[in-house]
Length: 69
Figure 1 (cartoon, rainbow, N blue to C red):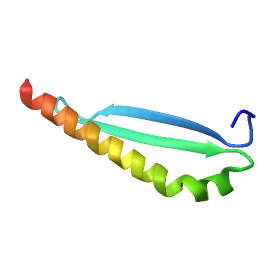
Figure 2: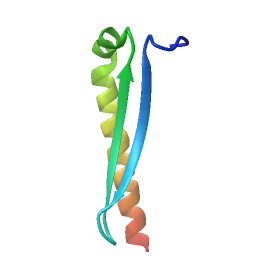
Figure 3: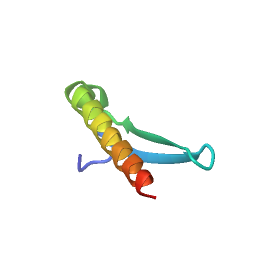
C-alpha cells in the first residue's frame, strides 16, 4: 500500500517432491501491518476464491501436460 507497515503481503509458492510422480504444491500469502484486519475483511473471500481458481487451473494444466508425455 505504498507505505511499509500499513498492509504488506508476501505471496509464495512451494513445490515439495513427494516421489518421482508426485509433487505437493503449497500456495499461500502472509499478511502483516496496521491495516491488515480491516483490509482482510474486505478482500479475504475474493482472495481465497482467486487462489482456488488459480490452483485448479494449474492442476488441470499440469495434469493435461503429463498425459501428453
